[in-house]
Length: 427
Image (cartoon, rainbow, N blue to C red; front, side):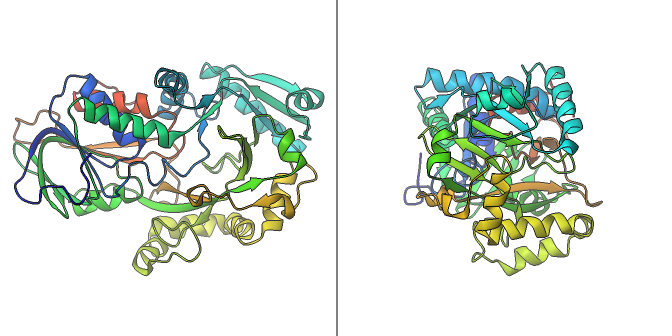
């Protein structure tokens, strides 16, 4: 990979396809382009290191596909990605474990929602076993619940390591990877597209924009209306320490609220053996706002005046205040964890030693009517045939939060198929 000191600053190199964004989805697209026979491909990443944002700042859970509406892109691609992520880790000797997950209901009102999870999971082909109180205790002795679900296919891995491996494999196969180079916009011309960066232009027959937190900005700067705005929601994590942490065997999740795409505060034993709890979901004060001190006034103002966010905030302000309380109060976060793991106190929570594990920012697409985009969202600007008068295809990945890391390899195939005009939209 080329870094900022060695990148060419003159000329406009030409490629079959240029991928914008060096998270796991971008590198999965690059991986699939090479597998499909493209010999001239490039990826441009604004940071110096691949996988810096959503990819490197999450729970590292390999999701089973339990939660997602049958027939949705998330359901189809996460179920496939669950198996493929494990196989990729095994093939390349990367850390992973199929530890399984227990989803627990701690009050009666959650039981109907749990029954819906069973229906969805089985419709998606996910193995799900219903547990009574004793069954939950057998799987996770420290957990108290009325009932639960055992999902054996859920696992854990290191998505940063997967992304670095995809990057290495791509370079070994002849791909060009530019890091430390920010894309500002894409201009479609009759027979090619110009990818404008802060260090010169690249020419491409087709472009895939996998820019995460900046995806809608790049779309608008390119003259394309994405129809959504990315709202950054920060989720913070803590390490769980002490005797209760020693008793957590795998993953423990609450029954999620169907009104939100967030899965709730959960406990996860990682591949390094530590147990972390979180995340909450608070509005970040900047696109890459990983703490309360990081504020970019223009970015925050843009979010606060966006009609979609205004409507969302008007409907969900109580929920938002609760999430802010858990962010600002370790005692409140401990109380949320104690619903599943009785006895957890604020003294049992510690900031992770690795700063990158302390918080992540979810790039959540919000529609103008205030609704959250619940499925993956891929929108194409232009035809797939770059020889037509309509110009080349520029495909924008506008909503790819969790479980996109799990689903990354199938997402790569889906996007390449769309560029080639072979895919049917399942959303």
